[in-house]
Image (cartoon, rainbow over all chains, first blue to last red; front, side):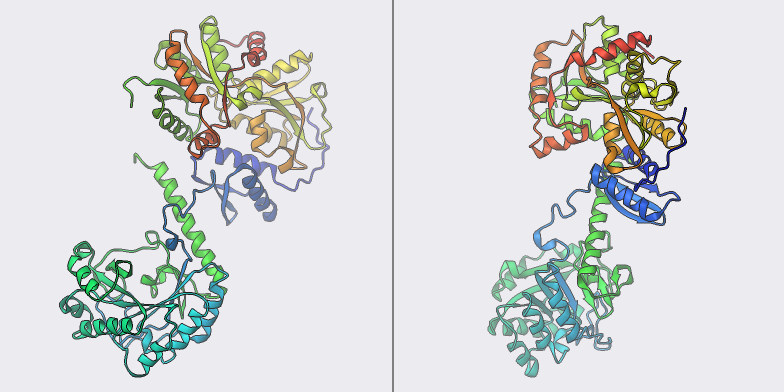
Length: 344
Length: 271
């Protein structure tokens, strides 16, 4: 009859393995199931789940509160279908400051002359640039606020360009005096200026950004171009207008801005904007963004708690890993949901 | 889609049967032998549908094949099987350190079996015991009849048999080689289970057709089936889900032991 004499101390939890086979076996491909770890030693349970998943080609998603979440099969490439520059972590955005000489009525981070500066600071920019390279970042992007309000903007840019090619977003209105001198000290081979301009004539642009701002922005584009910088022009338009931009393209052509240097994006309902497309963490491909207060999912939400990734800016690699993991998980879940609910 | 695809019957023992057969349908759509499929809740119903002409082909377990042979007086045909179907085995496992060794060591002990309609975890293990001279008075059998009708495909009854061993309700469990693999053999759980006897290989599933289905319909289909290529990523996705690397011709000799077992155990052609 049954032998009760055995004294066993298996390094794995065999009962848990049976539970895994049964529960994961019932799951649809790419589906995630929860498997309670039981009352045994937690390390042993986690080791068991990890070893079983590794051996059987399934994926341990996470272990929390005594429950393992296991995906049947391994999730598909979460980056499938993305262009190379959309891969999370390819670009690193930094909000150098939040104050601005303008108070655009749709600003996603509510910048204005009254907004606190909240500067990122040269030390953090130096460290971010240094950590970005080994973390796989291939481009740095500086934005604000208006970065040219900072007295050390050229130092910030130099810290970045010493590490990676850098794009500097600006409204292009401040290229005079010491700020023009700062611009001239920047590395033309490593810096791209991205200047905001919303329309081919002043009416629309000035309606959102303030009277006279269009003239000065166009002058800024021309000045930066004359200084030998590569200039991109970025327009923010209501979504329904983003497909009616022929005259805008013609105008940019006249300024010598090539097609590859034109960015036309839809207005997002974030910050000061009362209307615009809704952008949630689940619907945004991340563009990892660092401010003085932490790391955010995307620059459009850099003052919004719902898209705060972590308050810990350093080590940067850790923050990037968090974003990449979460994005991969969201994409995998979307695939699983699509497989489960096509008829529902 | 062709107006006259071959209709393939399969049993829905897991949610993943749907993507498997949709993958197969997509593959055959690009060949001269398109298919569609019908899913059944159990093999009895599927064999009935094959005999009634509701489906042209049935993806049958070994027991479903034996029963189809029995109900057609041997007139049905097996068209193909997975490479893994040609080398299926039953494994007897016990707790590590139990010192069981071979069938004879089960004498006077309790063996946990899977579902009564599982060839690998019930019918054939009993057959092997009987061949070794171990009848009901020699080895106590603990049966777990879960998911009856699916011929052990879900594997649930085999997991229950293993739990019986862990719970000291049985000395050993009879499981299929696929379940042994899925729990990681001894490598994953040293100190938990060990295999102490492995059966000879036998055949498992096959595509079954009735003689009324002409060769000019089955031949192009079998040719296309054999053309599925593990090295082709699109084919491989389906092959991996179905648990094979290559479709192969049927090995009918591999069913001999199950025919003998079904006859000796007086298992009816239907239930």
